[in-house]
Image (cartoon, rainbow, N blue to C red; front, side):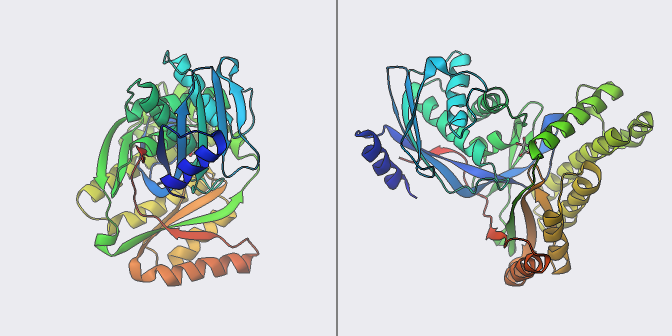
Length: 384
Ligand code: GLA
């Protein structure tokens, strides 16, 4: 749906013109998984799929939220009543952003919001971050606190951690706010310093497929929190602020110190090796060598499957089938326990790979996965 339709939808709903229309994308992560809450490196890029918001200010303390993708009329809230973890619905994400802005001392006196999204939900492609970031950007423009992309990302992360109550890292919000078309974003999650790294797949005759398994295994939230706590325990046992502080060439010594701590050992090994993989990938991309990142992506999957243990049969099936059918590399992307995988392939390999993956799902009795090509796209912006 384009900016114009969202604008018209707003007018029909609220009986007045919006002050503007904004868009924020979902993301996939190329490498650097479960490193963002360890102060490590990540490398996401934005999808062409976006959440779009038409927004107008109000001055009476009322927040009205409507999504074209959810049945029913607008949900009306009083901004003075917004309180962390008081809302279990989708509205907690945009309301959390309003709460976080006000908590940070920025004036927001109300808003009418109409949303629509093409970001698949529940697919590990950051539909929640897109929703948070689009609302944050709109209110930033309209109310004028003039925050930069990384500051909006921090604010959205706070909305998600404190208001919604999900203990996620900073990657998804930063990706949605800061990515650039044709590039992957190399982000140091310790200080949010970033580099836009050219990632022009088509120019190299390559494609990157996203395979949404369309499964989300139960307890994924609890398991995410458990991995996070395990990593914090590892850092404490090793006497560092975060696992980021364990250098790759100090890994063996660190693991020796953790003797007897089987689970923590596996978690630490994943995080330290994943940071090293992210650094290798950024070097290769900056040298213009996209093809050579394939095996590193696959190594990353093995580490997430065997050490971090956040994969699942459907994700493993995508990766194994893709590799057996000629892909250059493949891995799960995002938090895991379902969601999506990415596959790097020569352009000519796309039809055969897609067919092989779909067939493997049919043979295993899984739902047909959604397969699409991911073109590195623009980050959040005003679109009207
Ligand atoms: C989810 C979280 C991110 C990050 C990834 C794993 O997407 O929202 O912060 O931790 O999982 O890399």
